[in-house]
Image (cartoon, rainbow, N blue to C red):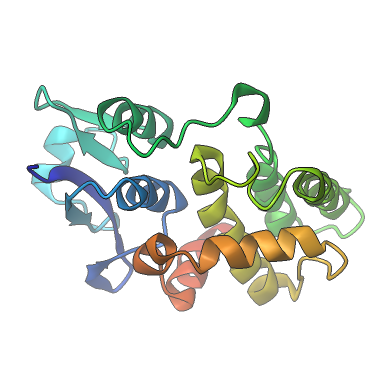
Length: 214
């Protein structure tokens, strides 16, 4: 099997290792879990090379090279293509669970950027995490039950960023009483695919710093 080609963000200040993009990691996780060989092209997003801008005029990652030689953007689209082309093992999420946890990431970003402790952004994030906790308590250990699916690979990098960034910038942690969320995060973060593709803690912090200080 010839390796597929993917463009992902390079680490800030270290162009030889993958950076802190959760959407790029989601694509790499999907390839890893399906044991699809891939060739990573690391892109310095602060000084985008010409070859990259030719294939991605908008300068966005991740990018995936399809069978027709065309580059495809958007992690939703890319993971769908990978699932279709490499159906085994299946990572298809049952439709009724596909949107579980989908509001956690936007809620996290709003809370992170918030300067007003009383604007409700913390409460909104807590409610989303509590909803995930209740779902995992009923279904667990993964969103769809016993089996890892695409929804978990979408959530894993986002929860990883949430844990690191809120602790660093706000001294905020996922409440201890959300035991199912904590177990879920440990389960995901300890998977071989995750350990292999995750960004270093300092890279994650460096990547978010400009957004926090904006």
